[in-house]
Length: 150
Image (cartoon, rainbow, N blue to C red; front, top):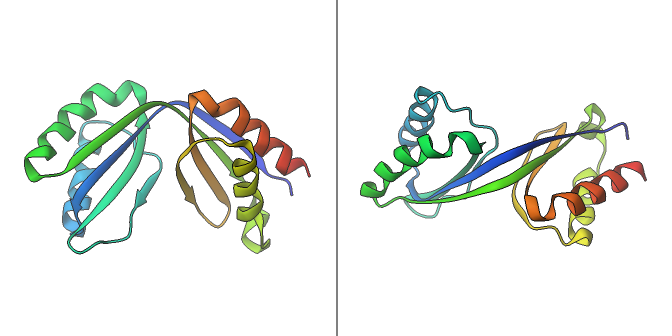
């Protein structure tokens, strides 16, 4: 595999628990964040549980204070924002992933063996991105680099 690993550091994970499943609400949240000139990277929507769900996304640590002003307003709608800063994204990209069964298993096994704490995973047909705490970044990066070499 000719995968390329890239890293982004100083990342904050935001999870909005008890968010309405209404796509209009979800669209409005990301429009509002964009209007604050905050760039969102990883986005994950948990499976719907009745009328609520959890939405997780990442932003740069530098945008945290501005974002907290916005998320505090969501509390009045019974949405519980949980914020965790000091993380890094490790992304593995390879155009050949699309037609190569087992790549995700190989990546997840490497992470499992490293005992790294994964906060969120997002994927596409040609990329897998994992958010790790800075405390375990080195072991996760090393494990992923080694697994891609084999």
